Image 1 (cartoon, rainbow, N blue to C red):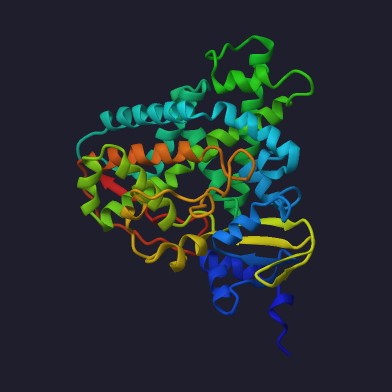
Image 2 (image 1 turned 180 degrees about the horizontal axis):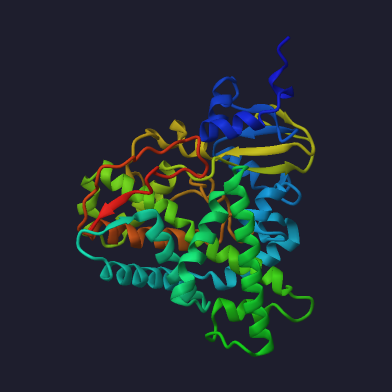
Length: 407
């Protein structure tokens, strides 16, 4: 006897199928809403702008208690802002937004661009570079300079590897997940020691830097512990360095559609930003995101039980033909002269970053991606023979080779 799909646990198929898992399940339904089980729990999966609006409304879905412990121990950290709701979430968000200002985003992007220029100046003619790896080091160096974290050159490769490991292993059991957990523990302890040193006066960070803000502004009246301050600092650095995935995808896009290289080379900023948005839409990163139903409710006539997991299909959303018209065509022009709605392009969350679970670092990620896309387009390089496949079973996905180029 075949069990109803709502009774079948889909954890193993989700791991094996990756990005295509939820779109595949939704394609078998008339409503596009999937009732299933994941990690032994009842789950309802939604997709589209209206679904995103429903998902990011705290009256419908909460994040507290919904983020799986393995993800907390790798990607976000314990007691991170991503795991909070209500007044606690908004208070911590205000702190984030108070320092992740447009000026700070621009400052980080400028430091990353300077780090890129330094790395390119050190390249020998004919040298092969793995773009994914080099971008991780460049972004790590530039971001640490921008936020005031002291970093010796000898420490750079290890820190970049750890930051990449946290992202690379958050959704996959096995060795990658083990590396991610160890990297998270190691870097939280490292940053907590830096915070303690600032607080005891043995380290003087640049005035107004994020390190100073974390260590000093959050101390009084029940402020954050050194460990939680370290988590918050790491949740600025780690997602910034995760842009290296999109830089590798940028190399892939410029190789497949070389006509965009010249346009980026001559860009005044508008096209570069549109290109960055299209890379984030077209290429895979997180397949879906989850929360927990606050109350018994319904969406488009489909029942959502109280306490059920609610999944938002990000890959399906970013490739929805009703929203994007020709979703499997790479076309940055779709974002030129277009105001993006708060629930349309959601690779880093939806809604208002001040009140919803939209990443406050999204403008920083876009600024870095746009800046480095222009620099990559202006770089004189060739692409040797390599494996440029992008497996949709691997989460997070990237070109198999990391995109090798010869300068």
